[in-house]
Image 1 (cartoon, rainbow over the protein chains, first blue to last red):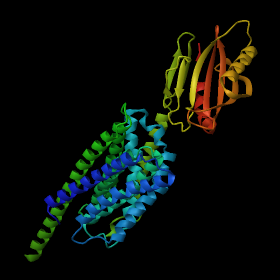
Image 2 (cartoon, rainbow over the protein chains, first blue to last red):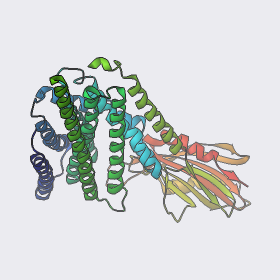
Image 3 (tube, rainbow over the protein chains, first blue to last red):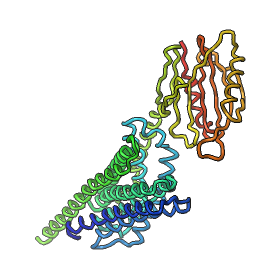
Image 4 (cartoon, rainbow over the protein chains, first blue to last red):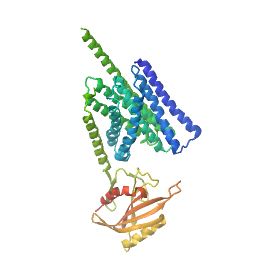
Length: 285
Length: 185
C-alpha cells in the first residue's frame, strides 16, 4: 500500500482535476453561449457524469495495488449500480414516494425523509449491487475490495442520477449541472466506500454476519440522506439560487466522510496485520 | 465464507423495508397536513393542503398555488368575494358570473352548473373551461375550473380551482378536501 502522503497527494490531484473540469465547462459556456438541443443534452449529461465518475473510480482503484481487482468486475458493478438506479431507484424516489411534493414542507420531514427514503433507497441499491454479485466470489479477497466495489456501485448510482439531472435541467444551466455532477460523484463514491468497508468487515472481520450489512446500509443511508438534505438546503432553499454553496458544502462533507473512511481503512489494516503477527507468534511457539 | 450469511440476508431486507415503511408513513403524515384559513368578517373557514403555497393577490381573500405544477399555468385555488344584492337570485348571479368569465377568458365555456350541499350550506357548483396564452408560448393552455359559489350575508363567496387540463384530475381530490372543510357559523 502506498504511503499516506502519496495517497493524499493523489486525492488532492483528483479533486483538483474535478475543479478543472467544472472550470472547463464554465469556459465552454462562456465562449459558446451554448444552448444545446435534446441530443446534445444527453451527450453533456453523459459527459458530466462519466468524467468525474472515472476520475474518482481511478483514485480508489489505485488504492488496491497489492492485488488489483479485475477491471471488468469493477466496471460491471459500476454499470449495474447505474442500471438499478435507472430501473428502480429513480422511479421509487420520484414516482412512488414523490419526494419533491412533500419533503421540503417541514424541517424535520426534510431531514428524516432524506434519510429514510432517499438515503435508504440509494444505499440499498449499492448494497444489492455488491452483495449479490462480487461479494460471494473469490475475487473479493481483501479488505480494500469492499471499498473498491462499494465505490464503483456508488459511482454508478451517481452517474445515473447525474444524467437524469442534466436532462431535467433542459440545458439551461450547464455549469450548475457540472457542479452538481462533481458533488454527487464525490459524495456517492464516499458513501459506497463506507458501506464497502462494512462488507469487508462482514467477510474478514471477527464480527461477521448480517449485522455488518445493516450497519453498512444504515450509516451510508444516514450520510447519503444528510448530504441530500444539506445540499438542497444550501442550493435550492436559499433566497437566491446559490449552487456554489452546494459545491463547497459537498466538498466539505465529502472530505469529512473520506477522512472517516481513511481512518477505518487504516485501523482495519492495522488490526489485520496485528492478527497475523499474533497467529505467527502462536504458531512459532 | 458466503455461508456465514443467509442467502437473502433477510434481516437486512427487513431493515430496509422497515425504513421505507417509516418513510411512507412520514410522507402520508406530511401530505395530510393542512393550513387553516378564516375570513373573520363572515366567519367562514376552510383548510387547504400545506404543500400549496399562498401568494398575495389583491383580488382574492386567499390564493394558493401548486408549486409542483409542471404547466406554465400555475394550478391554483382561490377564494374571492363579490357583492350580493338581495333582490338578485342565485340564478341571476350565476348568469352574471358567466358573462364576466366570458369577457375575462378566451374560449370560455360552461360545462355544468348544479347545486351542492356542504355542511348544511347551500352552494352552487359550476364547471367550466377556457384557454389562456402563457407568455412566450404559441399554443394556448386549456384550463379547467370549478367554482363553488355560496352567499353569506350581503356577499357571495366563490371558491375556485383552476388547473391545466392535464393536471386537473390530479388536483380534484385535494380540492374536494378543501370544499369539504368549508365551515360557516
